[in-house]
Image (cartoon, rainbow, N blue to C red; front, side, top):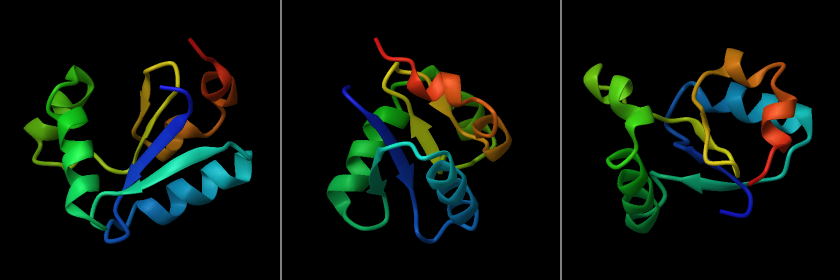
Length: 93
């Protein structure tokens, strides 16, 4: 994976603040709106259903968006975790 990917839904109330913080920090990322197309949803579900980082969210019947999939293969799910972790966003493997 070459760059960060934001999986989100325009229907999710948490998305706007997450995107605002990402843009405020000035990072480039690809946007994948999972409710825009079946292809986008399938791409996200493949990731969600094969990664252990999503297990807690699935257990609580959460979809798991918004989530920033970092280029170093880590994930940021929470807005509070996004704030102040700019060094995490710039790491690459």
